[in-house]
Image 1 (cartoon, one colour):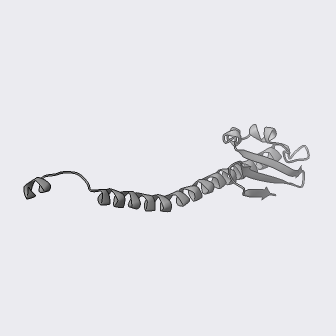
Image 2 (cartoon, rainbow, N blue to C red):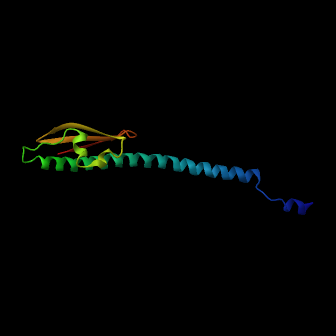
Image 3 (cartoon, one colour):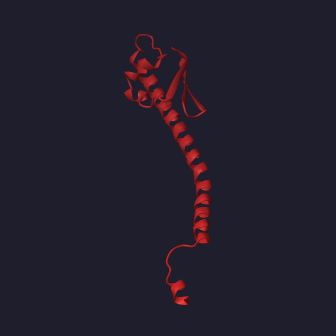
Length: 120
């Protein structure tokens, strides 16, 4: 009878409960880190779009320098110089000021509450 007990294969209920508990603990650690990384990625996308818009503004201004020079006041004018600005439709651009003296562009990703301001 003792040999019959030793020949049984499989996991006991206690072993399975321990494995489930360990997986639960690992999930509790990993999920907040994943959410934080997603928000950082959204912010990086908005920052990158803003830096690219800033470069496009400078090219736009330089093209118009001889005729008085002015900065673009909308995204459509900048898309001529950098079509990649429209790649992430979740990033919104707000042009507060745009004239011959400078510009202010604010970018924000739809999934993040952070805004980023680029000026000249």
